[in-house]
Image (cartoon, helix red, strand yellow):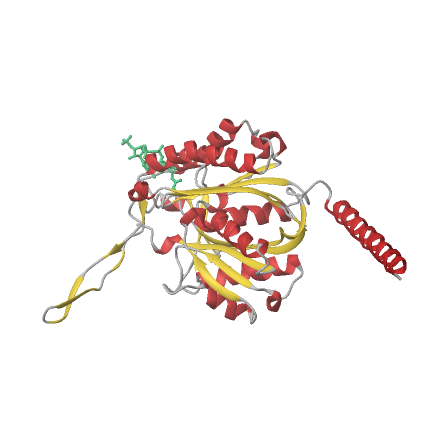
Amino acid sequence: MLLVYSQQFQAAYRLLTFIVTISTVLLADSCGESECKMSGIAITGSGSAVPGTFLDNRGLSELVDTSDDWITTRTGISQRRLASSSESVTSIATTASVRALEMAQIEPNDLDLILLATSTPDDLFGSAVAIQAELGANNAVAFDLTAACSGFVFGLVTAAQYIRTGVFKNVLLIGADILSRWVDWQDRRTCILFGDGAGASVLQANECDRLLGFEIKSDGTLNNCLNLGYIPQSQELLEGVNISKGNFGNISMNGKEVYRFAVQRVPEVIDKALFSANLSVEQVDWLLLHQANQRILDAVAERLSIPSERVISNLANYGNTSAASIPIALDEAVRDGKIKLGDTIAASGFGAGLTWGAAIFQWGR
Ligand code: UT7
């Protein structure tokens, strides 16, 4: 009797071992060299949208004392898109999102989370929910994330935590900003830099983890370098009851400080993210930086010894679109066929906060 039991147990054990071995081999085969687990993430879709109105440098020079030559040589920007009063963060973000969902071949109802990285919501209570309603993403939860020009990278890392812990499977991450609402159009030091736009990416749970490494940072002691602050105005409601009924001001920036910070901190944070990904800089196919200034892109690439043909740049056409700049540039490079399936991308955002961060990922499943 005991012998029969023992034989049955051994047979069952051998069968179990066989199944485990086979499934391990199959998983390893489908994932190539990457780490394989169901809680990995993949970026499977991208989309972008910009407002219809162009403003080129010549137009700007009618507004402030500047020139096409100064703006082009100091920043690399030739034109930017500006949102009209009939366009909103919600409308351009929704268009970008529809395109990203189409590429990922999933429906709005498949989404578990919509994360909107923005500093310029249409509603101070948050605009992600308005995008949820426009898309009809009835099963998702939606909320905003504020990290200025680092918003997309911070959002990518945040979304990845939900996916890796198994909480969510399908996430729509949007970077969208309409900074033209908050630019002082009489200030030539800032108004030449910014433009409006939206970019979206679909992140999905995947056997292979395509987010290979990341690092995110902030330093609030440098907060006064770049602000869009609330200007309080005292109002007496009743005798002895005063409230602050003000408004937001304009973007103010210490350009030289932000420039210095970016050129120093961005290569460092990319190096750290590459270290956590166990990759060397030679293994990076594309450097995808926040599109702030061509001189910053060039200086960072030079410090990392990445040749210019591996640097993605589209800021000549759009200027600095804040949280939207990385996902717009990603989307254009994917749709142009520049970024191919499996390419390794080192993305880095930096800006107000001050905040900065890098994410190393491979495009696609
Ligand atoms: O999302 C992150 C946000 N921000 C950034 O990444 C910005 C980082 N900083 C920068 O990109 C650069 O600092 C700027 C493009 C903003 C400025 O370039 P710069 O080479 O640092 O110029 P500057 O501020 O040192 O100004 C040089 C000169 C000044 O004249 P003086 O004092 O030397 O006579 C400025 O008054 O250029 C003048 N200037 C301009 N001239 C023509 C400043 N803005 C303009 C302008 N047109 N638009």
